[in-house]
Image (cartoon, rainbow, N blue to C red):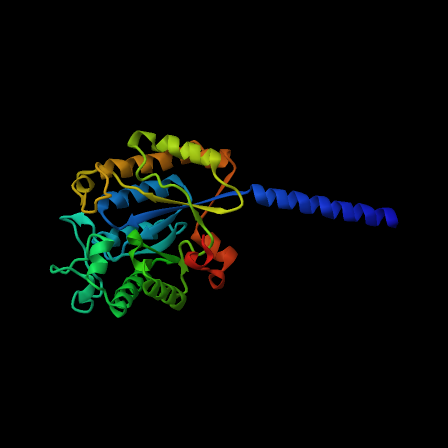
Length: 296
């Protein structure tokens, strides 16, 4: 009996050690692709990526003119976890959008033509009212939920909706009210974006990332994809940090992700791809923590 107990104790210690080591070595990656619904060119890139079978989360800009096409595409791909890209800026010259709630209900959020401001600086310089921000963000969430697709989380275009503590509180309040997760509230750690990487180096960047990704944390890769069509080529970012050849950058980012899927780069490097549905199921909405409070 004594020998059996010793054996059992040793086995438990061994299995605990193996489990702990396995857990520590787990490499997890969450790919979040933003701006779905922004334009037809962007929608076509998303469609191609969905059809490749890559696991990722898709964030939709519901104030944009092409969101309905995005919804139609998503209805054909229920495996994709969908979020709302809460939008308070419209940054493209000659292609602008405004509030779903209507300019008369949220006048402090728009310029003289009724469009969102192109930058965070101009947005906040106009002294936006918190109650109007809540009206507009609620309208975006309502449009998303009523579109007929399952909505799992929210995030924020250009970071504007959560830049001020009082506005972050509005996002948190609305997410709780509608039963939605919030991107970066599950302990995700942002890794370098591909967006500003040279066009011809994005595939190499993704290869290097796959080989050197950190274990024992949820790594978040935020992507911006598109097709290099005339429609997207005509868009010029009015922000100083905007990229030249934006449409080519977005298509190169799409091609890098497609390459990674075709060559099984993630799997061959021991990376587990997850989405926001996985995080919500595993961690739970009640366990979300603000990255501002936790420091992650």
